[in-house]
Length: 307
Image 1 (cartoon, one colour):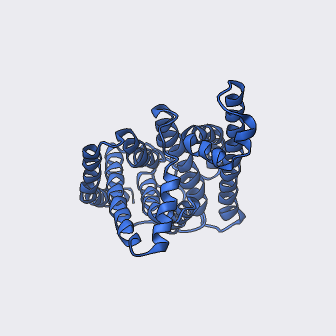
Image 2 (image 1 turned 45 degrees about the vertical axis):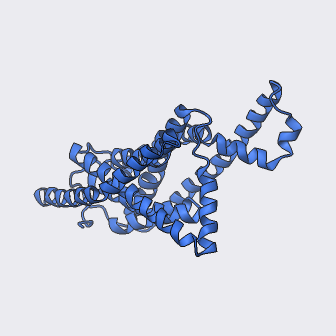
Image 3 (image 1 turned 135 degrees about the vertical axis):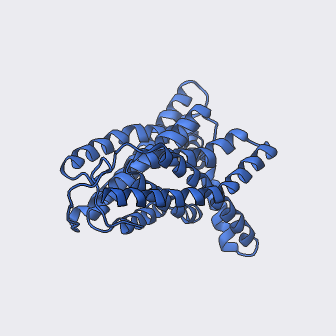
C-alpha cells in the first residue's frame, strides 16, 4: 500500500509537508475524546432529569420514586439512547467542523474533503457490508465459545445488555436519526477527521490508520464490541485515505449502524427476514474483498499517473 505520498485536501499531489511529532499529535485527540465523554455524561444527566420531571408533572410517575431508583434511571438512558445520542451529535458536530475547517487552512492534511469517485463510494460500501458479515461470523463464534467459557459468556451478557440501548421505544425516527445518521457523522469527524488527521501529520499514514482504529475500538469500552469494532475502524481509516474524502467513511459508518442495529430492530422477530439479512451480509464478504482489491489497485493506478 502506498502510504508515503502527501496529498492536499483535493486529493491531488500537493506540497510535501514534513511529518513532525508535537504536543498536538496526542493532546488534540485526547481533548476531543474527553469532550465527547464529558458532554455525553452531561447531556444524559440533563435528559434524565428533564424526562422524569415531565413525567412527574403530567402525573405519569412519582418524582421521588424515580429519583430513588437507580435501575429506573438506567432504564431511561437505555430506552432513550437514540434521542440522547442525537442531541449529543447536534451539539458536538458544529464544534468538530469549526475546528477541522480552521486547522485545515494551516495544514490541508488535517482532513480530506476532496470530491470522491462514485466507484470508490460503491466499493467502500460493499466492503463495509462484507465486514458486517465477518462480524456476524465472529459473534456466532463467541457464542459457541461462551458455552464452555464463563468469562466469554459474561462478556456476551454484558454486550447484550448494552445492545438493549438500540431500541425503537422512542420511535423509528429517532432510532434511524440518532444511531444511523448523526452518531456516525460525529464519530467520523472525531476519529477519522480529528484523530487520524492529527496523527498523519506526525507519522506514516499506515501508522495513523492503525492507531486511530485501536483508539476507536477501545473507546467503545465494552470487550465484545471493542474486539469487533477494530476491523471496521481499520477499514474506515483505509477508505478515508484511499478516497481522500470524509464523506466516504461517513456513508460507510451510517450503513454499518443501519444494517447492524436499526434494520434488525425494525425487522423485529421476523426470523425469515433476519436470516435473509444475515446471509446477504455474509455473502458480501467475497464481494467486499473484491471491492477492496479494486480500490487498492485503482488508487495505485491514480498515484502512478499523478507521479
